[in-house]
Amino acid sequence: MSAPAQPANTVAPSGGGVVLLPATKFFVRRIPLVAGQNPDEQVGLALEAIGPFAPGQLYYGHCPSADGNETLVFAAYRKNFPTTDHPGWVTAEAVLPDFAGWLGQTAPTAPTVWLHEQTASVTALFWDGRSQLPAGVLARELAGRPVEAVRAEILQEARNRLGVADAVAKEFRGEATAGALNKEGLVLTVGGRTVTLAPGVLRAMDVRDKVELAGQISRRQRDGRLWLVFIATAAAFAACVAVELGLLVSNGLLARQRGRLEAAAEGVRQIEQANQLVVRLEQLAGQSLRPFEMLALLNAARPASLEFVRASTAGPRQMEIEAQTASAADPQAYEQALGATEGIEKVELRDLRTSGGRTVFLVSVTFKPGFAGKGGAK
Image 1 (cartoon, one colour):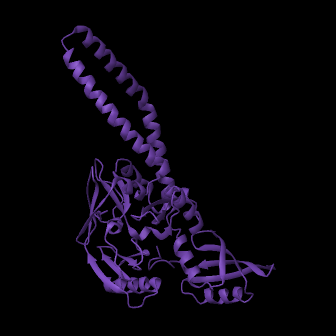
Image 2 (cartoon, rainbow, N blue to C red):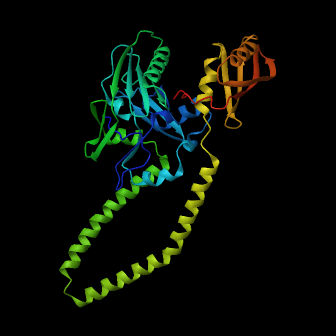
């Protein structure tokens, strides 16, 4: 694999190219794979278990390890990306997170944190030394803060995630860039390192809607066949260009084609109006929901014996968790821990019930405005 990406843009270059999305938008997990089963289906099931949103509400992809025993899943809430960016995705050769170039590098053999500093963000990839893939990926926007402070903060969190306080840290700088797609794959460059993503891996990592992506691939294959047909037809036409009958037939074909285009003009106008309406609705809807940051805060305060059963949002600053535990003291302990957590405005514990030696309860949490302003876990 390899890692070139353009500076966290969300618009594809004209005429195709590669779209690189900001790492700060993504939630990343490494999961095991069952040999002999479809990895894409396993990723979909894992996403349903990991977060409160169905795969249909996410843009997601995954990077499998060389041995096929595990994969790194990365997902972003669809509403984090304005609809106005999507037209550029249709012609793009790939739409990837901007940390994709790091995933094909040789993995460290000891606990290590790679810190990649770009113009607007810092990304940390942390390795536990036991896998070909990183144990996780974190990203923070600078948002006007000194890069040294953001780098120190994300390094500490990565070490905490690894459970290795003195894990080696390596620093890299420079924007991610992407080369052109060729028969070997896509060349990516980041932090002075270059890697090539093979076509099969590239398709798995592409975060676009899976149905739409399959349709785009099918259309490209069809267009390739049509192009070959067109070349053959053009050669035959050139041989017959002197024949009057051939000219008459070709003029008739062109006339019919112009008629179809004219007949389709009204449909095109209606599609443009519908697209403008959708764009306006998306703008009115806003992009403030931060479910993964909410879950990260709630999970950090959770007692070890307490399990989450269900999570749902009730607005941009509210989340309700259904939990269960074998310890009757856990609900009150969890409530106190949440109340002391920075960024949480209100905690309400309700519907406590005990059955079969387990206590089940609901906890409704209201977060403070701007609770994720410093960046949430991805």
